[in-house]
Structure formats: C-alpha cells, structure tokens
Image (cartoon, rainbow, N blue to C red; front, side, top):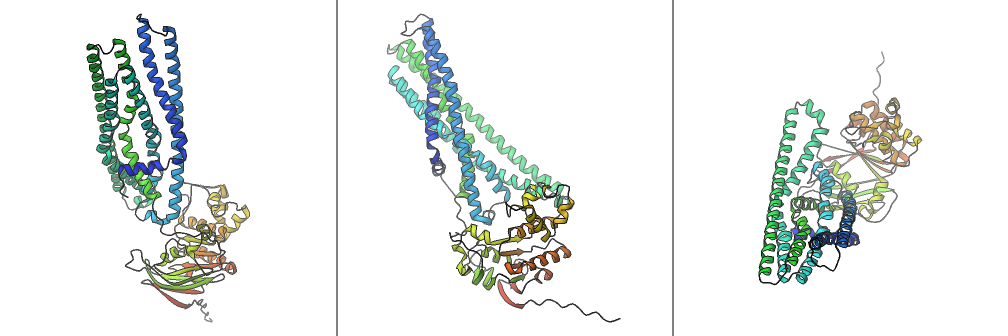
Length: 568
C-alpha cells in the first residue's frame, strides 16, 4: 500500500468530486438554511415565552407561534433535500469510482493478483467502495455547513449579545468540531486500518472455504477450515468491539465538552448581567441560540469512528486506481495475417530469465506446438503474445508491427487464449457461451457446441441452452466446463488461437473430436498449442521444446504411422 498522509489522501478523495461540485454547493446552501431554521425554532420559541410572560415585543404571540411552525416545517424539508443531494452525489460518485476500478483492473490484467489475494480484491470492490460513502455523503457538506452556520452564529451573537458570546462560540466550535475529531481520528486510525485488512483476509478465507469445499472434505480438513473461519471471525469481532468502545468513549467526551460549554455560556452571561452589560432576555436568547448551534459541530465530532475505516478503504481503492499497468497498449487496429517473435527474452525479477532468445513465426494455416516441463516458461510466452507483459529484449510482431502499437480491443478481436481453467458465470449455458459473441444465433451456438463435443450433453438437459449454471458450478464436471470453454473459442472464431493445456480435462475420445474440428478450420486459423500430451501436439506441423528458458526449434512433427497387422 502506498504511504499517503491524511491530508494527501483527503486531497485525492476531494479531486474525485469535481464533476459534482454543483451538487455539493446546493447541498451546503440547503443544509445551512436547514440549521438556521432549526435555530430559528429555538429563537422564536424563546421570544414566545417572553411574550407569554408579558414582555413587550414588536411581534405578537400568535405570529411567533406561526413562525415556529413555519421554521419547523422548513427544517424538516430542507434536511430531507440536503440528505437526498448528499447521497445522490455520493452514490453517483461511488459508481464512477467502481467504473475506474474495473477500468484499472482491465488494464493491469493479472498484475492485480500478483500481490493481492482474490478475497482482498473482492473486499476492495465491494465493501471498501461502500465504506467511502461516509466521507462523500456525511463529511464534505457537513464540514462546509458547520463553517457557514457557526460563522453566522458567531456574527449574530456578537451583534446581539456582545463579543464575549461570539468568542465563546468560536472557541467551542474549534474544540468540539476540529480539535476533538482530529484527536479521535489519530487515536482510531491504526485500528480502522487493521479492521479493513482483517476483513480482506476473511474474504479470502471464506472464498477458499466455499470453492474448495470438495477438496476440504476429501482431505478431512473440515476442522482446520472451521478453525480458520472462527479465528478470523473472532479477530473481526474483537476489532469491531474496540472500535465501538472508542466511538462510545468519544461520544461521552463530546457530551462532556458540550456540558462544559453550557456552563461557560451561563457563567459568562451571569458575569455580563452582574455588570449590567446585558439583560436577562438577551442572556436566555443568547444561551438558547448558542446551545442550538452545536448541531453541525457535534455531527463532525461523531465522524472519526467511521472516517478511520473510510480513509483506510480509500487508500486501498486508490492503490488499485493509481496502479500503473504492466504494459501500455497503442491505438492501431489490425486483421491478423502473421505473427513473428524475434529474439524475445523475459524475466519477472530482471535477474533470472524465464525465456531466452525465443524465435518463431506463424501465419494462417500453420499449427505449432510448445512442449516443456511445468515452470519452463510456456505460459509466459503466451502472456507476451497477448501483450500482458513486455519483453526485456526482442519484439513480438503482428503483421510486421510491434504488438505494443495495437489497441487492446484489436488484440482481443484477433487472438483468443484458452487455458485449462474455464471460468463460468452464474447464469444459463447460453449466457455463458454468448460472452464470446453476444449476438450469436442459436444455429451458431449449436455449431460451436458440436465442434467442442458438448452439444449432446446440453441436449440431454431439460432446458438445453437455458439450463442454469449455479454459483459453485457443481452441476458440471471439469471436462464439461472445459468443453463449454472450447465452445466459446469456436464461437469467437478469432484467426489466432492460443491453447494452454486446453484438452487436459477431457478424455481421449473428446480430445480426438476437438482436434479433428480444429484441423477442419486450418485454412482460416493459426494455432499455438501448449500441452504435455503427445496426443494433443500431434495436430501441430512443428513442435518446439522449451527447457530452462531456451526455445529449441524441433523438426516438423511427423504423424506416427499405424503399425502393420501381422498375418494370422
């Protein structure tokens, strides 16, 4: 996580609200009027009491009652409008932040998960963004409203009751509305950060528990799994309890400060009255007005408990938004004709090369294979071809131009990667297939599924393409998932296809069927196959051996001849 000071973080968060400044301004005006209306109720109520007791006033008792009702209604209406504007702005902004987050995730690709677990990323996308609502809906406008209202109150008290009341008002505002919240925030800051971090860890534990439930039961690790869940739950409960205790203690301190302020108001009023500098009605009206003005600053004093977590969440969100992508795509478009890899070397740590001096070329109608042990760099080559990584040396060319000059959309349009791990979304089979081609007709779906050897299974289900795939995907076998993924590949019909152990989870019969379908598309397709299986690589015209990062050019792959039958 990047180290940001609290002021720097607030500046970053405020920079995101620029498009909505007009909403903030309107909410501040409405909110300020709402608090003035609330104080007006107290002010006119005080005058009504004096009028009822027979004090001569320029306004009648009936009019004072009418003004109390009018100001009361206005207070409720203005409060509603202020809250509506605050939350409309906040949730509109949160939607924009989520859009930025997903945009950053798309640019960064797998880099996001290099240093973060899936649970942490999920926690950032969901709860962290929601937690930022405290700052945008309950901090910005209340802070500005407090400044406007308290400044107005100080001026009014100075004119009506004397400068002593004005100075006391300013002192109380600074202590309750600024000094106390800053101290509370500093005291809670570490605890809020620890809570957000533990919440991320718990997300990872829960995901592992849900998606690894079969493996957990098979290995007899249910007790360990339960222990991990109990431990993270207990840590979360403990941190939450500490935060709540501190919030309660802070609220008590604020109440004490308000009580002390009330005592100070009474003491100063009594002192002024004893010297004949102020009348008793003025003292009461001044006291009531000053006491009623504490609403905005009390709202600020109660914020730190939630702001500590809001700021911790904002730090994590901004880390992803500001993360620099590993690669920068260009703007050019292309229609695949050829691929050339010249002298490509790459290492993740700049010290230990994963692949060294890789050279090969490919065009439509050519199938090549890459064979090597696990960890030899096979998948790294595919990342380089897809521009998920930039080579340390050498260049990857599409149609004689570097891959870095092309847009991400153009690369996706021309190149499809299919790996042994197929992710299916919760929804129907048809929905999952149409991810590859949203406007695909039923005929195209059938054709793609037949090529992938999955159509018979789909037909055997009660609802066919409308059959639902549940969240855990436990209504499908691993092989069925992989064949649905291959059906997506056939549906996309990109001219360059990268298969990374794509048939590892299908049986020999289905593999032969799939390879046969790929062979039929050979004139319009360029294919790179990564596999441990000799049977899968048999489709290739040439197979390269990858060992210790070195890419060795093999001879053209010869199809094994069928053994001759001996005569009986």
